Every structure is written in C-alpha cells, then in structure tokens.
Image (cartoon, rainbow, N blue to C red; front, side, top):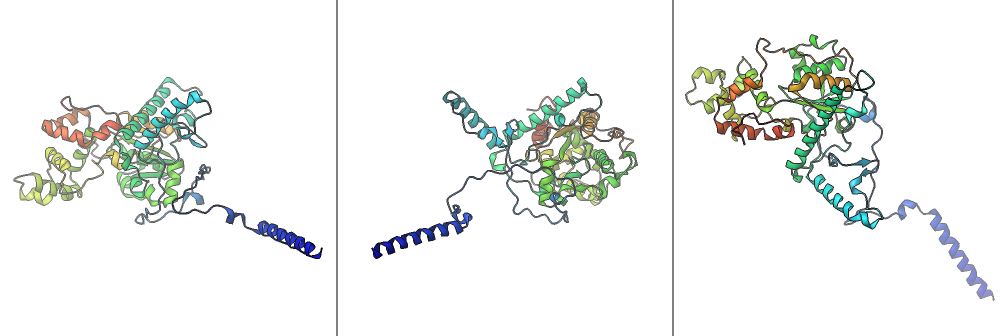
Length: 424
C-alpha cells in the first residue's frame, strides 16, 4: 500500500514539474528558427503615413560625395495598369472557390506575371494619381481644357510604361541608387521632385522651384548663374538612403522632355556657336583633333569653330575622344524613367499649358506662372523644328539614321514622330 502511494506521489510531482516548465518557457523559443534552405512567408506591412519634411523619418542629409549604395533594398516592380489594394497586387491573389472562374483567372495571373517580369524595378510606393487626387484649379467643375490636359498626362504615362515594359529586359531590374537620382532637384515645401533635362526649359523650372521654396519673390529676379551655379536647390542624392526613398515614395515626381533632334541642335548652338570657357577647350579641341583632317593650329589651340557634322561624328563614335555630357545625353539615362515612376510628364513643345497645369495641381501660388523669357543669347531665335532641319540637312542619310537610332528610346518613350521621312 505504501509502495502504491509513493508511486502515485512521484507521478503527480513529475506532472506538476512539467506544467511549471512549460509555463515558464519563452514563447519565442518555441517558434521555428530560420535554417538554410527554408524560407518562411512573411507579409510585408504597408508603408506608414508620410512624415512631414524635416522630421526624423526624412533622413539626415549628408555630404554629396558620400554616396553609399550598400544595403539598398531591392524595390518591387509594379505593372503600370495592375490593380492594387492594401494587401498588395491583386494579380497575386489565390483563385476563388468557384471552379469555373479558376481557368481565366490563372491565365490573367500568368499574363500579368509576364508583364511584371519585363518591367524594371520601380519605387515600392506607386506613383501618385496626381491629376485625380489633387483639387482642380479654379471653378468647382473642371473645364474641357483641364480634362484634356489630364487625359494627355494619362496617355503619356501609359506610353512611357509600355515602352519600358517592352524594351527593358528583366536583367536590368535593380534598386534605385544615388546615381539614378543625381539630376533630381528637391522642393520640400510643396513636396516636388524635378528631374533636370538640359535644353528642355530646365533654367526656368529651377527658377520656379526657387520661388516655390521661398528663396525668391519672383522668377524674373533670379540670374542665370544663380540658377545653375549656386547651391540654393538641393539634389536628391545629397540626402541619405532613408531621405531619398522617403521622398521618392511621397513627393510628386515630374520631368519635362523635348524632341531629341531639336534638343541636340539647341545644345550645339548654345555650347559651340558662342564663346565658352569649358566646352571649347574640353570638347571642341578633342573633336577638331579627331574629326577635322587639316585643322589649323589656332583651331586646335582654342577648340572653337566646331561644325555640326563634326559634332555628330563625335556623338556617334563608340570610341569618343571625350565623354558624354548632360546637354545631349539620353533622357532615359538622365532621369531613369523606367526605374522611377514619374507622376507628371511635360513637354517643351506644350510648355505653357503643361507647366501651368502642373503648378495648379500642386496648388502653387496663383500669381506664379511659368516664365517665358530666354536669358542666354536672347537676341537669337529659339531652336525650332525648321532650324533643326537646316542643321540636319548638313548630314548624310546614314548619319541621320544613326542619330535617330542613338535617341530611339527617347523618341519611343515620349511619343515623338520621326523627324525625317527617309528614317526607318
């Protein structure tokens, strides 16, 4: 009898000890641990509400030369027309319980996955639907003109997304780094990011940004050297990683483009047909030494007098004697539109309408309009399509074709027609 009681007591004591051990155990130690070859499905949390400029979430600024790209997260590609909600893209939802709906839904999923695979990496947060989320300017009901401008914006962005999806291989998917945003200027008051495209109204756009930032009372009071050689406006790559990603995901991103041949001629006229202490000795001397058979000693010394066919020879040479320059580089390389999902795409050819429409959408002061003055070589006419044809008439058919091929992605992405009938 005593032996039975002792055995029962031992069992009860052991059970009580086991219960006490379980109750004291840390629950995190019971969770499965990550081991090589095994991945756990973790749902990403939606981004927090945007923080105001200057808050700790914006990220601290840093010296421009300190560009650390290590540890940058890969950004999720997003198809331009994909449907999203708070849980992510609808294309990745599991099929519903109805057997009849499974086949077409699977086909749609496969089709969207193929489209997403072709798209390069883009910023995690989708672009703002700028023309529908912000208040309409002026009257309560938008006029037919404003509706037309809104539709034109949607069409431009659609064509740009389609060109990126079609011609950018999946191997080009990559994360945004400071190098990709080095041409983007920041205006924190109105939360605007502007990608500078030289010879497409960039001087006047930077004047507008200075007025928006409260750095000047009007655009007419800002000199050319102040626009281009001062540090009044900050570039996006001068912020740290967190500051860059925060602004890319919450600010309104815009760029303005121009017909590629017209922009090229405008750059040539500005930099090579007028005295220039940088472009003549750096580019002019190298171009003349390489492409002019009997260049005079004076021309080789000064670098002045470069002719347009010689300049185009330099541009098309795969072994250029001197590198590229932002004034004639591709827009697709300056602003990375296949990597950064711009909210607004304006054109130099419709500058007044597009610029003032954009200023209304961001609720800029009503007295601020886009300036129309030409502050460099103001005595000369602006470069037009007619002037551009005169310069390109100096080239052979093959040179024109090669120049068109050089700017083909810009022609395609921004829906510019072929400038010459003999181009294919």
